[in-house]
Image 1 (spheres, rainbow, N blue to C red):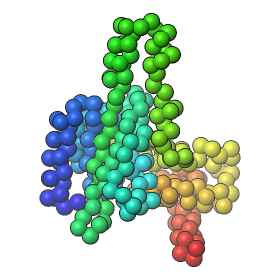
Image 2 (image 1 turned 45 degrees about the horizontal axis):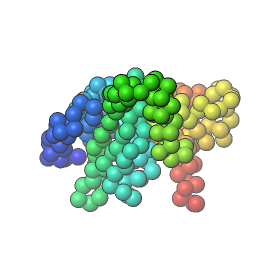
Image 3 (image 1 turned 120 degrees about the horizontal axis):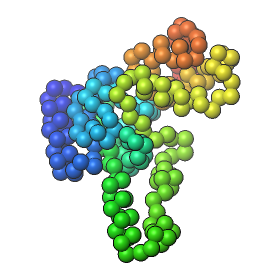
Image 4 (image 1 turned 90 degrees about the horizontal axis):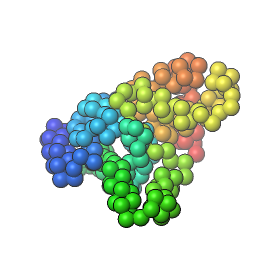
Length: 233
């Protein structure tokens, strides 16, 4: 993003936070530095992030899948706040005059305070068993808004935490210890990590190599082979 764009959208962050209130986190990402992308944030207590925090797992996936070429925004997907509260998250893709993606404007809404107020109000009028049977908020149902295979958005202040989060999501289903994976299995993991956008981050190759107990040269070979297969396909 240009300095002028950052200034303009930073004012929007401040405006939205005051207009919407303390239950809405507003974050502005400048994609010139994906490792330290947040350049403005309001109500950061919701995700625990500050200026300089990196892109989230979902933001990386949006960029890697080139979602911004199909739409100008993504709305109402699930995020996880500090304290593991379910958030309703939305992202607007900021593009320059040529259509290049240069930034993200993200809003994360924590409605837990309103759910608590709603429950208390009904408890004043009805027995507890009525509230339990009729007034319920099922996080599993809320998560159904996610597409199959899409993980909720997780927020971190450090780049290493983002990498560890994404790697864990990809490798958690494996029944084989990492140091016993075959080359084919490791390449499949690298392919999934690339689809999730982890290699958009500086230092990702080194981190992935350590996690998969192999050399950085091996990771580069896997990536090169995957790129050749994509071109040939």
